[in-house]
Length: 168
Image (cartoon, rainbow, N blue to C red; front, top):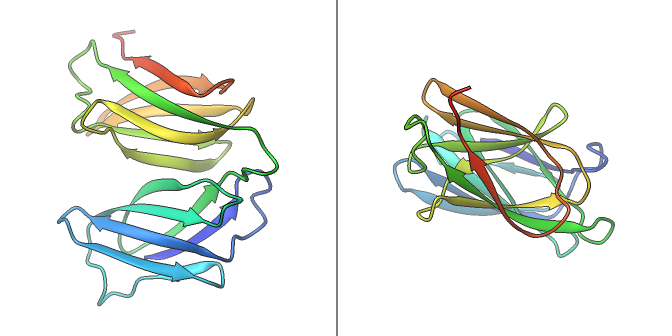
């Protein structure tokens, strides 16, 4: 796994210093720190499986997480907390179709062509993410081959946002 972290607003400014925590589908965990904008986990450190990757930059940026399968190059984007209004939005999944149980569904947040955040829902059926206020995001829920495009989301406050799947 080769991980780089960039400023979400500019997408061209690399974040040099951050810590990376990874957790494999098999439960193994590792932590590394970056000082040059890259975190590299070699083939001897990671196996071919899905990993939850959490990056925690310096105090000027908010934490983010994405799912990725090793081996891969992972580009992550974090919001600048000093230059932007940041809201913590906790997405709550309400599945009326039976196709998207929160225990096995993945929520993906995109901004433009960039995946900003992706993860499984927590034990309470929610997933929190830090988003830049008044920015346009796209939300998708996936469980196996089932995909639900929630559509666009513009954060205007911190709090809970419910996502209800439907049969349309």
